[in-house]
Image (cartoon, rainbow, N blue to C red; front, side):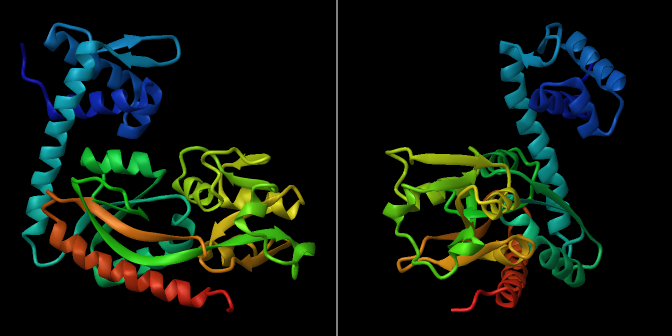
Length: 305
């Protein structure tokens, strides 16, 4: 058997994750025929098939699943060797891969990226926006250096650093301004608009309304906070959004915003990274920059009390 190459492992990992040759090739920035050839050579070297090829997608074979776990360990170790070299320098330079959940990214990223770039000249920031379960997986696999998301994530392999806590607010049609703010019991009887499955903010909103055990009378899903607010503006229902999103999402919508009575629903936002990351000390310093940047942004867009 010929020696396996790091490039083949990287292409294999991409195909295993995407389950599609075209999407995997795009992720690796190569042509689909080139990726197919590398996978074929890898299977020939191993003497067995790694994938079951279907008309629209590919699936890992039983051996492929075992191979994928080992391959990801190798890829993560190689990435950490690079991080070890970066950590030995006086300051952080090169690529920094940051994951962010969608209910944070549009509101904090502009200031965070600006402040990081100003304070770390030569830093090449790569942003990955997706839901929490994917961020945690990609952190564990070494595809991300750190992530900004809602805490806790309760993963023993990750360091969690709280950044700030923010409340949720109620968004209603504009004509409802001035009406009494409904209690959580009343919300269960209203047409409540929430993010689709997979978003942690959805689960937090449901928890506040105590809707886990009993499904609300009417519950509609949206793909983003922008969609939810525009649906409220059209008179379809009401929704909850985090305070940081108010300035951006309500500026072009005919809605009213109200704060709940205490205890208000809230979430804690933080940064996480692998405990084994060679960049841990640098990421601790970066978390301080992110915390300060977030505080400045939130003060600028704070709701009146």
